[in-house]
Structures are given as C-alpha cells and as structure tokens.
Length: 395
Ligand code: PMP
Ligand code: GLU
Image (cartoon, rainbow, N blue to C red; front, side, top):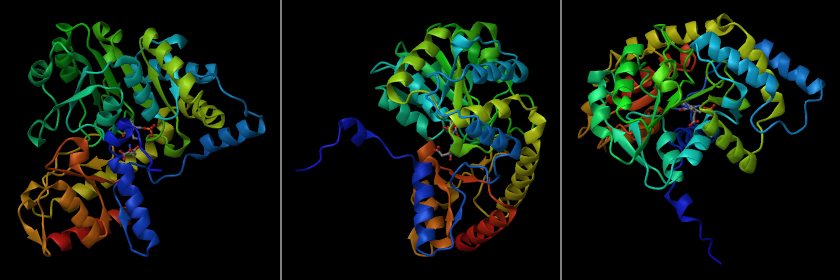
C-alpha cells in the first residue's frame, strides 16, 4: 500500500530554521565541527529563579490537565505584564496561553482566516507566518522591503497591498529576521492607513520585546482606535531563555480569544502545567532580572557587525532588537566560490554550511531572496570562529 498524505501536508514547507538546525545536528553527529548560527535560541540557561519555581510546582503536585486557556494566576500575571510593560489593559477573557507563541499564531490563523482571505506579510517575515497562513487557506501577500528602508514596510506600501480581500496584517517588531523595530510614529502611520479599512485585524508579534537595544517598544494595540482590532502575541522563549518550555500567549479582542480557546480545546488542551507555573514567576519578576542577557546580546551584536563589516559583500542594517543579523549578500550572486556558482541566497547558505561548517538560514525562507540570516545567540568564541571561517571561504 502506498501512503497518500493529505494535499495540505504535501503543500506545507518544512520550517527552514528547524530544518537547518536539524541538518547541523546531523552533520555534527557525523563528526563535523559545525557552528550553528541558524536557530534563534538563546544560549543561556533558564534563570535559576524560574527553574526553582518549576521544581516547586512539581513538588506541589501540579500534574493535572490545566484550564485550556491557562491557569488564572498565569493569566493575571500576563494581564499585569501587559499593563506594566505596554500600558495595555486586558481582562481574563482576552488572554489565551498556548504551547509557544507559534501555537498562538496558528490558533489565530485557524479561527480568523477563511480560504482565499489575503494576509499582508511585510518581508522579511518570520519563517512560519507564510505556512501558518496557508494552512488555514489564507493567501500570503508579501510586501517587499529592502535594507534601504531598514526592512520596514511604509504606509504607502501597506495602502497599495490592501484589496477587498485583505483580512489581516501580520508583522513582528522587533523583527525576526531583520532586527528592525517599528517606532510609535511608524506604527501610527500604518494605523492611519488601516483606519480606512476597518475590517482588517492586525497580529502584532512582540516576542522580542525585551531584546531591544535602543529602547522604546511600541505596541499597535496602544492606539485606542487599534486596540479592538489587534491581537498582541508574546511569549517567554526568547527573553527568558525558555525556548523548550513552550509557553506563548495572546491579548486579543474577547471574541478572538474565545475562539482560540475553543480551537485549542480540540487540538492540544491547556499548555504544560509545570511550565505555566514557572512562567508566572518569570513574568512577575522585574524585567531588570533578565537584563544581563540583553546586555550580552548587545555586545555580541557589536562584535558580529564589526567582524562582518570586514568581509566584502556583506551589507548589514544595524538591527535594533532580536538577535539576528540579516546581511544582503547578493554581491555574490553569479560568482563562483571554490568551484560553486552562487545563484541565490540558498546556494550561499548551503555553501557556508559545506565549506565553512557554519549553519545560517537562507533569506528565501523569510521572503527575501538577497539575504541570509545569522543568529548571534551564540558564544563570542563561536561568533568569532564562524565569521573567521566565512571570511576565509568567500575570499
Ligand atoms: N514569533 C517569532 C517572531 C519568533 O521568532 C518565534 C520563534 N521562537 C516565535 C514567534 C515562536 O515562539 P515560540 O518558541 O514561543 O513558539
Ligand atoms: N524562532 C526561532 C527562529 O526563528 C526558532 C525556530 C522556529 O521556531 O522556527 O530561529
């Protein structure tokens, strides 16, 4: 018998970030000395005060199914966090805790998108947006940006991309992969366009909120006229070094939150009990408790930008947040390096993997074909060695 998978899964692309990380692991297992700069994952351990809360939760016998949308105490901690950090007022009916921000995004897509609806994705966008949208039958509408506008979509571009079928706008700020941050004024300019199109809902992915080197995080929902039409997505993976704990959450219009709760109740049920208890402690702590990681990322940003500036053909914007650089490497297209002709960003990324033993991610996965993404959530030694190797193989 031949296995006939569904059309849906056949059409789905594998996550390029996870695929590259898996490839790097595989090559390492074969004995290759691979430096992994492909995955956006802090190399810090989860802070001790959070680990202790988890151990306490185990000992306190938190082992039963959790409420589908999250423990009330966690929802309250999220409500306090939204108020404290973002000036946003949500009540319990507007919060849904999920198994990672990825599930939060998936839920929102499933409950809000009908087949044929258009979803505007400023490029570069985070790798999974496009396929999450497609899984719900939506049509991603990519709005191309370049290094010239710091990879940010302008109000004019948004206006042009809107059609009668536009249902949502999805973006991340700080942006994965470009590190760009939309200022309050830039968000207001986008909101002004959306005022003329009152049915479009915004998904504002703020998971890198605290990994910000310039200050001034702005949320779309802070505008009174956008509050009722914005889903604010956040999570603990990045800022708290908790990628494997899998907790994300949304603050949303109550109708959307209710729908996500219903959706999750049929798919995964509530998120993990121990992780949720630990996240209460994480979110209740002052943000200053995690500042040491942000300070370290800032140093590494300086280091990697300095090292990359010494390599011809690596044109970088200065990322204001997150922990990625997204160099435009189109200079190499059409050139032959060590017998390999580089046609596009994927060729270049594969060339770096094979010849320099450095794992990066092709910009094509983020909707940008001129760039590659390099994560600097790695030790300074790894960053120095990786960029040295890259320099050697492209020279
Ligand atoms: N949004 C962005 C922009 C991300 O980079 C990631 C990667 N982790 C996610 C969402 C998903 O986060 P989580 O690990 O909480 O599922
Ligand atoms: N968000 C991270 C990244 O972009 C983790 C990988 C993933 O979830 O795709 O690398």
